[in-house]
Length: 86
Image (cartoon, rainbow, N blue to C red):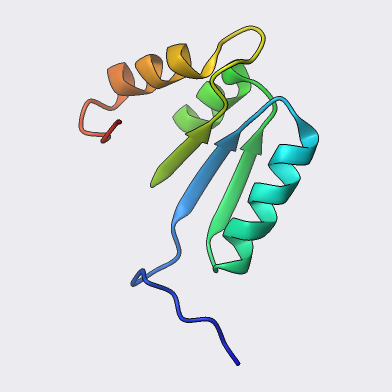
């Protein structure tokens, strides 16, 4: 039985987390739903990947070394004011 997606196309999801096990689990879940997943191991790497490509969604850990998730979200909002945030 195939899984039906609720989206008209796969989402491009950037996953930013400093824990390998978290990246692995969420990547597999998102990919199993048909989405395209990029991963970054910290906020600085996530910001670089955000600037280098187009992403529909950014999922980030809040507590990370170098650049935490809250600061990453602020940087992304400055670069892309139309990006929704919550």
